Image (cartoon, rainbow, N blue to C red):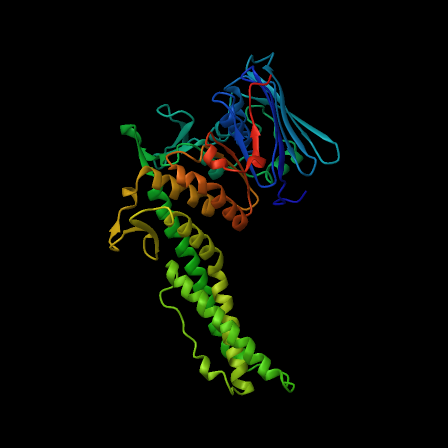
Length: 442
């Protein structure tokens, strides 16, 4: 299997969860909804899936289970079994098995007491555990507190946690293609963000403000790419005009004129929509009356101009589609205020009179709605399994009924799979075909 080649998760199995439950979850085509009573392990199943795919083996020491298995659409199976104390060290251990699509098995023994972040941090003198907050480390160089995921992503490492061995190459390679993105219940506060080490006072930033800054950065990167593309095309435009061309056949000029008029209309509509979103400042307006009777030389110049404009706007297309869907999804629900894109600030809020409001003045429900949609549209990579816990949190019933259709639109644009745990019948609506029950079976 090539790196970056997505493998779709098809089945999740867990035996002896909490010493009680056996769950078999056959995933639906794009969206799977887990439901069931409190305490049967809906959130835990999501976290187990995320932990195994991210090599966070230490998570599995937090509760009893006998076997956890992920089956993928290429017939590969990843399984964690035989949870028992290591005879030599008395520490909890397990066996990791990956059976590939050809039936070959790869094994590794794992120590459940230590995370991958623990192993990585030991290599760097400036990374120390921070006792004030569980599962965090401090970078002594700048007094920043890092989570497990941040330690792994920043400093890397493929060590098998605590075992003294490395992942078998096939296992390691396979996990690079099994991407997950966990969206937890606590979505509005991102902490710790950083703090003064000597004072031991962690700081926090609201997620809504962080995402506003994130969008501002993304918009800046997008506009910079647009500028680079425009500069490159503009510089080569004179040379391309001077290149020799074939003589037009009778009737070809009229076809070119008809095609140009349609393409220029499409460009006007696109640039106008990008202005409405807030990406472009001024839309272009092309004088269609000059097309009639155009000679071949001018037709060729206009064709090059249209091709270049189309190429320039392509660098904005993906960002524009995501931004448009974000604005449409949230603004149809918000009352007396609306979310807008701003070239300087990223996300801004305006009231009915057009006056700006601070992002963190949004209500809890409005913030949850905006953060959730932004996360799904801008922070989830394609070919990922999104693990979503209780999307109904803080949302009005009317908003809950619209969430599934919003999610389907986002998946259609972004191309990921979603597994969600919910108690809300309004989220599910009439889509019983997407539901998997986690009950009291043993």
